[in-house]
Length: 231
Image 1 (cartoon, one colour):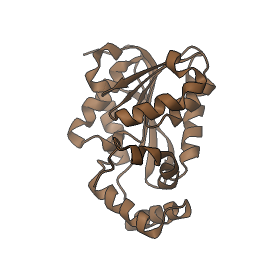
Image 2: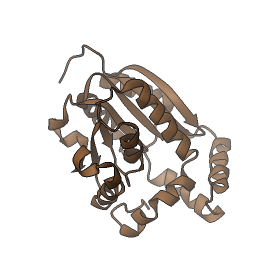
Image 3: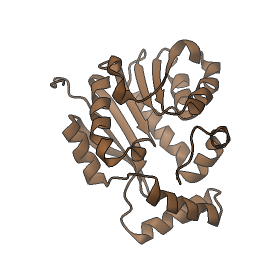
Image 4: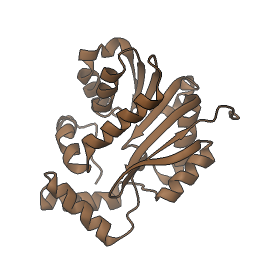
């Protein structure tokens, strides 16, 4: 059964639980920050798809004090938590918080230097992924950077068991890790790496490349071409 991200109880424990659930969670965000520092101008505009509780947003706000941010989130409870998290960095003035999906927001077209989808795309049903990617492309300025980091399809039982052992090392109990494996089967729409790259290219992205892998989690970055056809 999928977690209820509208639940105040689930959201209150999210930050602690996610660090046990996702291998190298802090390192993933450190790598993401390095990518943004290599790409973004000082006064960047950044779209974060799936605000969560605001950890990613807070890291970027501190690193880019002159940047402006827009975040989308499907859960009002999560969005409220993100707003509270970033208040110390002038979140009310520098961040636009939107309840809803970027796929339904044409006003975001062409605005952003970067669009981030971290631990989000694997929740998107297979039939909706191409629209998800195409809409992310549309939100970017030309030469803008899209970054996604998600669960990939597991390639072997060894990889599955290694993931279970890794999350136990990070603090999940054996029972919790078993429930995690059950959720991977029931609640996620994971692609393999090859299909991810092909879908990004079909959506119109260029310069698609992998930037990080930890067991069966993998990240990709891609650019909107400098001269592409809209629509």
